Structure formats: C-alpha cells, structure tokens
Image 1: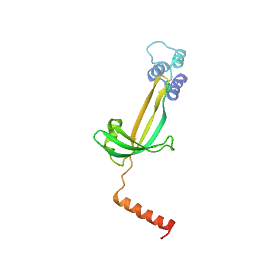
Image 2: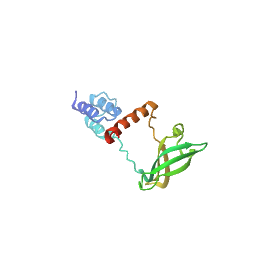
Image 3: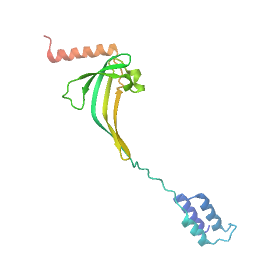
Image 4: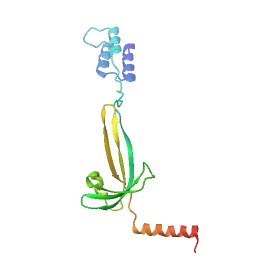
Amino acid sequence: MSSHLATAESTFNSESVYSREISTVRLAAEGTWQNDINASEAESTINRTRTPRPLAVKNANPRFERIKQQWSGVVLSVQNESVVVRLKNQTDKGQPDEEVTLSVEEFDDQDLSLLKQGAMLNWYIGYRQGSGYPKESFSKISIRRLPSWSAAEIRDAEKQADIYADYLFGDS
C-alpha cells in the first residue's frame, strides 16, 4: 500500500472527512484514476477536505420569569363558573389569609377535573422577559396533584394523634 493511500485512510478514519473525496484520493493513490494525477495532487485533495464540526447551539435570547407574588390555597367551593379559594400569602407570610372568588377560566384545562372542594393550589403572579422579548406579566394557577386521603387513612392518623396526645399531655 502506498504511503498516500495510508494517509488517506488514516485521515478518513480519524477525522471523518467526506467519503466521496477520500474515494477520489484512494483511486488516485492506487493509480487507477482515469485522469493523470500524481501523488502531490492527491495530497492536496486530502488537505482541502473539511472535517464536519458540531454546531454550538447557544440560546442567544434567554427568557426568564420573575415571580412577584405567590399564594398557596385550598378550594372552598366550586360553583358554575367560579371557584372560592382561601389563600395564604407566601410572599409576605405576615399577611392574613384571604378568601377570593376566581373564574374557572383562570385554571388550566388539564386542572379542571381536579377542581373540587379541598383541592390545594399554588398561584403565581410575575413577569417574563428576556433579550429580544417584550416584558409581559403572567398569572399561573396550578392544582397540586396530591393523592386524596381515604377514610381509613384519616382514622389511622386520628388514632396516632390520640396516642401522641396521651404521651405528651398524659391522661387527665
């Protein structure tokens, strides 16, 4: 095997250059190419081949959300198109609880089946912005997806609470 063929194959294997150009070089190095080509022309073909490089993808315009107000709450009742919720301020915990009425339209369609008395939720108000994006406000209400307690689990928890109460406070 000629040294030029070995160079072409090692270039092909180590740098993953375009196979069509390597095939041309291989034919030239073996002397089977139809045109008159010498080894120096074959080497110059090898030197002109390009190695594909992965593109670096960078998010040039990142967006971020800044939450200005947050509440946790529990659904007190669900009427036709409104939901009554008791909210606890998570941003300023010193504030008293509030009872508000929200429209059903404020909730995500995926959460509507979970919207019933006792459901727990989180409500966030803030804004989004980023380079190349206008500043926009948002409000997001999401129902917490926690399993419901069965009647047996509630009875067991009450029994456990009675045991702890007896231990801590004694039988009076």
